[in-house]
Length: 176
Image (tube, rainbow, N blue to C red):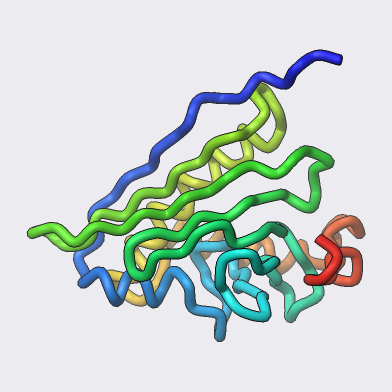
C-alpha cells in the first residue's frame, strides 16, 4: 500500500478593517447562516476542542462539511478537521488565525493535510479564496460581494438537486 502524498500547506491572508473581537465573533457565530460559508452555519453541541461539528444549510437539510474542533484559542485561533461530505476523501485540517494590527485584524485561513491532486485539494483552494474575500466584505460591510450573492442565489435555485450523500440524515453529529 502506498503512502498518500499531501499537498503543500496553503495560507490565505487578508486584513479586515475591524477589531479582532468582531472578526472572531463573526467567524464562530452559530445562530445564522454565514454567507461567506455558502450560507451554511456551524452546527455543534459546543464549539470546543474535541467536539464534532457540521456545516448545515438549506434549512438544516444539507451538510456540506463535517469535522472535529481540534484547538480553540479565542480570539486568536481556531483549528478543525474538515471533510467534504460530497467527496469520499479523508479529512484535512483548516486553521484560522487572527492577529490585531494597526490596520485592523490580520485574518489567515490555512489548509493542510490534503491529499495532493485530490478533488478536495481543488475544492478547498477555490473555497478558501471565496471565504477570505467574502468574510472580509461581510465583516466590513454587512454583506458579501455581488459575485458571491449571485452564486448563493444560484445555489438556492439548485438546492433540490443536492446530492443525497449530503443529506443531514446521513451526517448526525454523534456519528462522525
